[in-house]
Image 1 (tube, rainbow, N blue to C red):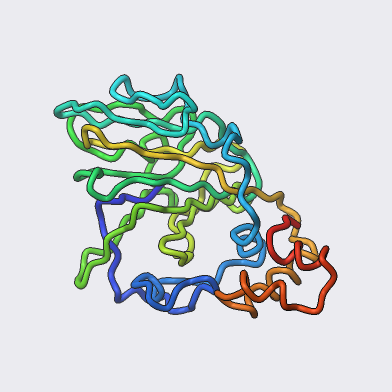
Image 2: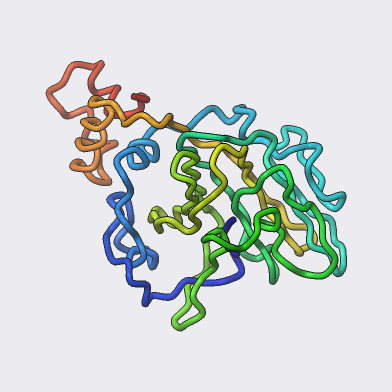
Length: 260
């Protein structure tokens, strides 16, 4: 149930809609799809505090070859031959829309780097080199892992990837380089607690997890939709333009950095 980071995406993808926050210079723009309003609002909302417990890797559910930083946000894999090692988040989600950030240096991924979500049954270690993420779900009924398309030209996945879990719809998607790439996995088990998870074969790699935001199943408020529309209309320079608007200070603060 995830993305195999050592694979690549082709420029020939059939999805052509631009993501409203995507940069025109990004090579991923041709892949972008327009996110639903609930996700668009969530991605434009200030992130949760770094100390949110959902930003931590689990101290109990990881391979012996992984060690965690003191605050639990960084997992580091020790060098180990012929072994694939995994780690999952400390807390999972059963419902709602949730976004996690995973930071993983492309130079530290090796041949079988994978990121996605797992249940509590996901294996933590395997002999040889494989992708552990998704090993707890039979690859049938639309739940098989989905990687890239091996055609040319090829695009590398950058260090920062956002995972978008919709527990209500049972889907998993990814945001790469500011572009929402649409649904990557469907038919995730409804009602099951799903955790962010990674697996690696690269000795010395460091993988950072951060929970960014979450939202219930209910549609976003009218206030948040108006805020999003205004900020999109202002474009990239909205940070410098907000103070120039003929608005009360409270509304300017709302447009700048307030959650709705």
